[in-house]
Image 1 (spheres, one colour):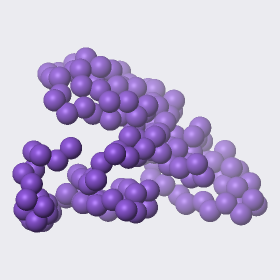
Image 2 (cartoon, one colour; image 1 turned 30 degrees about the vertical axis):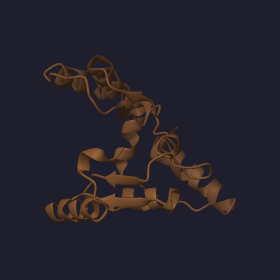
Image 3 (cartoon, one colour; image 1 turned 60 degrees about the vertical axis):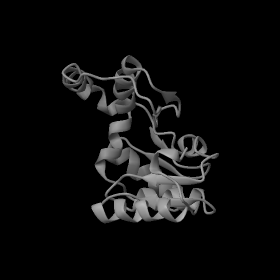
Length: 162
C-alpha cells in the first residue's frame, strides 16, 4: 500500500516485508532509488486499523476546541478549524496515506514557513519543494530567539505574519 505521496515521483510504501522486498527488487530493476524508512510509516495504512479503537479511546479524554488558525491534515490537505472535525481527522490520519505533495501545495501563497519539529528532514523536504521561500526550523529555544530576530529585522510582530 502506498502510505506517502511525497511528490509526483516519490512514494512511501508499506506492507508485509516479503511483498515490500519484492517491490524493491522490481523498482531497482527499473533504476528507481529505494530507501528503507522507519516502521512508523505503516501507521498511515490499513495495517494500523487495529490500533484505531485505542486511539479513539484516548481522544475521548481530550477536550478539543475550535481553532483560530486552521489545521492542515496530511490525509487530505484540507483546512479544518472545528473541534469535532479535528477529532475525526486524527483517527482518519492514522490509517490514511500522507498526501505530502498536496499539503505543501497548500502553503504556496506563504512567504515564510515555520517547521516546528526536532528533526531536520521535514525542513529539508520543504526547502526542496519551495527553494525560494524562507523556511525556518523551530525546534529549540534558540530557534525561537532566531525567529524573533527575523521578525525584528522585518519590523513585524509575530502575530502579523500570515
